[in-house]
Image (cartoon, rainbow, N blue to C red; front, side, top):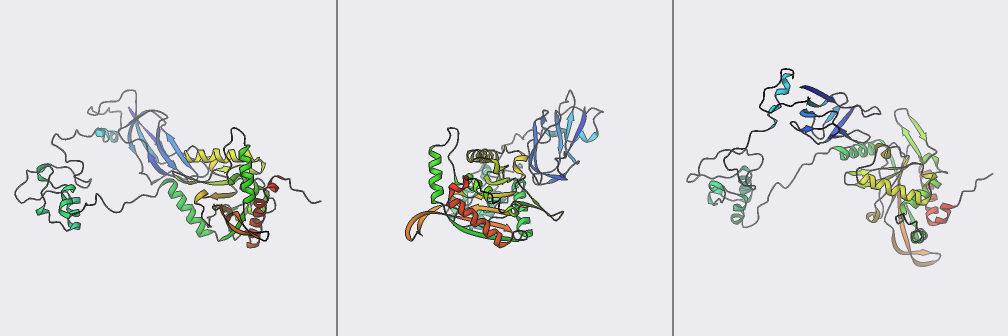
Length: 419
């Protein structure tokens, strides 16, 4: 037998380390080649790492939340055609450290009865307790704490557990009310995608002077067009939301405001202006916020854009989105749907310089053409990097977007170029 040391692989694009998100194996486990062993996350994407060989796991490096440098040992396997039983002596060919993890099969549980499920917390190791003596109070540290907090004298409580041990349920009658089953607080380690989101949001707010601009948009005509298109939509197409219509309008507007379709390369101090519009669609998933990218949105038709938005959102929510589908946006659109509220202040998805937020569309009375009528109103909440987008240009861009959304037929009419 021999040992195989698998090191943290180079995951590309200058990655120097990766964070452990979740282990799918542990020391003592037998794994097959290509079996998923660990999930890691770089600053770019989550990556599932398969086993490079078949063998038994001897040791692993790092717990969830820890970072492991590229090229450092990640997991050690014992490999070979035959594997000795746990009690058998280790082959001389195997290095001495391989002998330590051999007791992976833990000693068999003691024959003495264990406490009931509601008795001991993890902090108290099972031990052989002597028979209860007169006046002796038997209770776990957790139940002693509960009694102390409830003002209960344990000497007055009759225990119903083994040997007269006091259980949590024995405390309830004495307190005259249910006793809390556990601590009132819990700690959740910030790891993986949630850590990455936290770091990026903090960096964006710390480094980017945000200029926020909110505008009210009458989407009555847009809603009428949306409903009409949904009635005659292709058989394989899902119902339209406002999102693809806004994306289509945005690609038209950016033709006149190219300074908003820009990435800022801080390392070089350069603004990289893009001709193509790669729209990031902020998508809430069970793992946190992800931003899949609709590439070359300016070249897509309405149903193509709607289908791509739906496809990418489904892949992001199911955890199947690839790294390439989650990077490379040049401007982002975010929508809270029915939870959109009146207004919001979206945080820029660096290194972009602009983000557009859709708030909830509601019907309310407004003055329209000299009369009070009911119209459908939605606010656009936008944020711009004030270092590179002047307030006037930001406002003018949103006004142009408002004009297209209030007259949606113009979204589909080719722009006439001046001579």
